[in-house]
Length: 177
Figure (cartoon, rainbow, N blue to C red):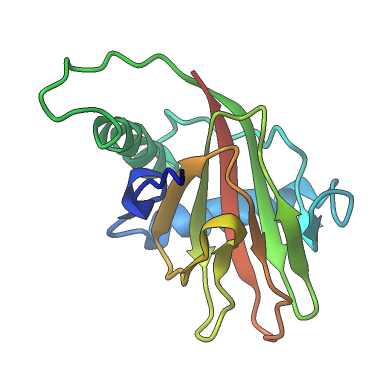
C-alpha cells in the first residue's frame, strides 16, 4: 500500500515585499562573516558559520523574521485539520547561515536533521538561476528575490551546479520546536 501526501502539505512558499533594504543588510552581514564554512559542508561554495549573528529584533532584519514567524504558523495550520485547535508554538532558531553561489558552485543532496523545520530566504537571485530541488518528491522551486521557502528538515534537497557569473545569495536556517 502506498501512502502519499500532497506536496503543499510539506513545502510552503512565501514572499517578502519591499525587501530591498532588508536584503542589502543581509548581504552585508553574510559577506562580513567571511565564509568560515566555505566548501566544508553540503554547500560547495561560500558559506558562513552555522550561527550567523543576526538579531531578529533589529530593525534591519525584523521584516524577514516577522515573515518567518507568521509563515511558521501558516505552515503548521496547513498540516492540521482546519477545524483543529489554535496552535501555540514555541520555537528557536537552531542554526542560521548564509551562502553565496558563484560560477561552478553547487549544493549536494542533504537533509537538515535534527532541524525539525528548515527555511531558505533568497536575497539575490540572478535570472536563469538553477532551482532548489526536492529530490525525493520530484519538485523544483525556481526562486526569485524575496522568496522564502519552508520545509521539514527531513526532506532531501539540493542545488545543481551554478553556472552564472552573477552571485546567488541566500540566508537559511533550521528551527527547533
